[in-house]
View (cartoon, rainbow, N blue to C red):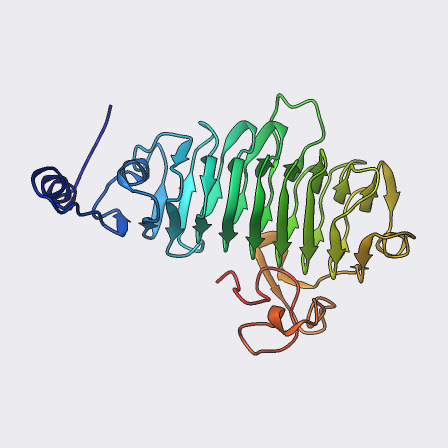
Length: 330
């Protein structure tokens, strides 16, 4: 088994084993204190933060093995998704997170993951966790969640994440969503899901969430792929202030029935589906990955009017997508 530890590792180990006082770093840096991301995680304790500095971390460049397994309560933070890339090079899922609570995953690009479920990020039995300011691109899966799969989890918040160009693997026989969530409670604010070859976001097995201020753009291929799918007989999720455009089969599929945004808004009963729209978000240059909004975009000042969602940049009403809200992507 490969291990490369820094002087600070051995100093901490010496102090913890030979003295009454146990010393653990609250922040563990990669590279610096640790060469491998997995080694830093393995050394960390509940409440510690592994900080990843700018660079590409992959089998060919740094010798990292995949998937990387995140320990319970250890926060994983990159300096910025603009410069921190974890690239599995199709050797496995990028990050596996199981039986995890009170954590955070932020500031990272997850690239070229390949798995049965959750090519970029696999989550199960996760609670009270923030997943923010990440990019998921070019990940693939065989069965569920080409970018991200979550099951049996609760109070997980997804905020200002970009899901771009994630797809089914060559061996997949089903239509996958970029993001698939099963039997979980969650919130999903100011994300963009785009250019996947299946559905954008799919909820299964009673998954219930608050889904606001997102953009679902250009999902699906040929004649398959909706922006948002909820398989529940009667949706109990709050789905509001979202924008849909050019999804192959349409904006919504609810309990197996296709709906436009207007039709979903007008459903009778006690549902919480309202203020969803269809229209071109007017991205600056989506083909090259620039998802800033240009002047005249219907996504500007179109989010939840609650001041808690106001844009951090100018304090105005929430702009939909990854650069709006309290924590813009970069």
